Image (cartoon, rainbow, N blue to C red):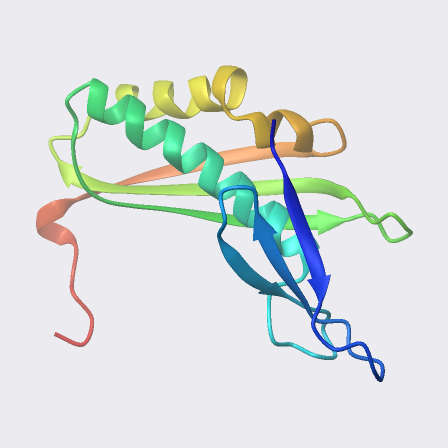
Length: 147
């Protein structure tokens, strides 16, 4: 079972900031755009989607013995104009950095995440179309900024 709770931080005034607590005991702030002290709840859905697929993909690539030295998933989502403003279009961009990475292995890992493993993606697909792209960056070409 998955559990969570949210608790209002300030009972007076118009603030809508909450402390969210996961069933495993982790905390984060959630807020609305006016307060702007934490992520909006809908942003957490986008984060959850990126995190869910990232865990799957990196796990699969490691099992395939791919030499991944960096990995990022970027999510952009369009919402319906009227409440409940569900996601309608979601774009996921995977950037995988490493040595001698197989394009076929990366593509297969993403496909398996989307079609079999990612529970968040399965839920998001009930209201939205997912569009996925990926890029492979050779480790020798990655540049450290500010180094």
